Length: 249
Image (tube, rainbow, N blue to C red; front, side, top):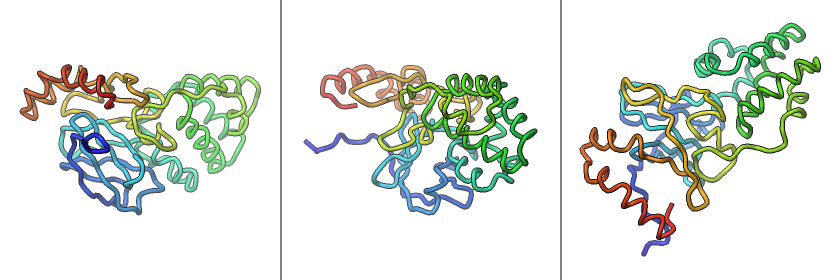
């Protein structure tokens, strides 16, 4: 028996382009900004795309079966925006995320801009958004409400008001900043792309054998039909039960 379970995926070496994106079957997936100059590996599973540097998983996205789509995680771009706050208004991942985040986020950003120069206010707000790498949106929104009530207008102040317990990490592998690896922040946040005409994929998550895996009960049958893999779909539960008995995630 091999020392590690066989990965049922297609592996490809990839190199991020100038926009921090790697391409697979015409679709483009974002990678964290601090890894855009590295040669990486892309692993295409039936339900997700994993991007790694050979040592750890850096990003996980729902797999897109459309064409010429951009699947972006806004957390991947926050380190650059913290360095270059002038690019805030042109940052497409942030604009799309902004349509979904709680209203208190906009109120807090407006309060920062009333008291600080625009670049400094934007940088402080980006630092707050980076809390999504470890904490839930609801927890951050609550901290922002408390900070506004206390007339506290700094990222350090908000960080001191957040709850002490971080969320469970979302789907992904080992390594730091699991939310930044996944296709979405800790929240109904960044646009994750989706199957053609189906909208964003938001699969349920289950805990299994000490790590996170994605439940395929919803997505696997239609995807398998699209890939002409009826045997996999028909026997998925059997495979899952056998994997659980063998301890394989």
